[in-house]
Amino acid sequence: LQLVESGGGLVQPGGSLTLSCVASGFTSGFTLDYYAIAWFRRAPGKEREPVLCLSDREGRLDYVDSVKGRFTISRDRARNMVYLQLNSLTPEDTALYYCAVRRESCSEHQWPYEAWGQGTQVTVSS
Image (cartoon, rainbow, N blue to C red):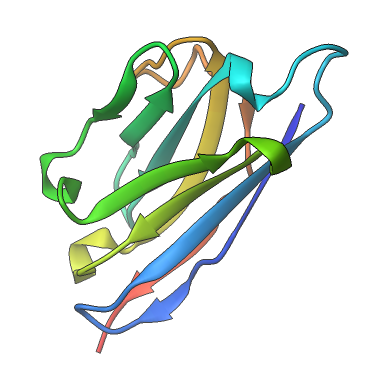
């Protein structure tokens, strides 16, 4: 199972970006529908942290209060893709953003996730 993120870049404070994560290489019979999809991020000088997660079982779970109302997660089931819409960005959102997946349910911990992307850089600066 492979994940590839894209869509990062440099944006001014208050701006928006849409990150994408495409999944491939599923075991026969499985699709992204069977997985919980999470976005993590690693800010400069900090540990990687969970941001939010989406699963059919739990819906959306937020792990960072500051993204509520600003970040939107969605999925395109036909394309095995997940999107993270980032709005009203601040310099504190600057980080390397990763998508990760695990079967069925979300977790705020990193170790249960069975596949990770390589990350896409988001830099918020004027």
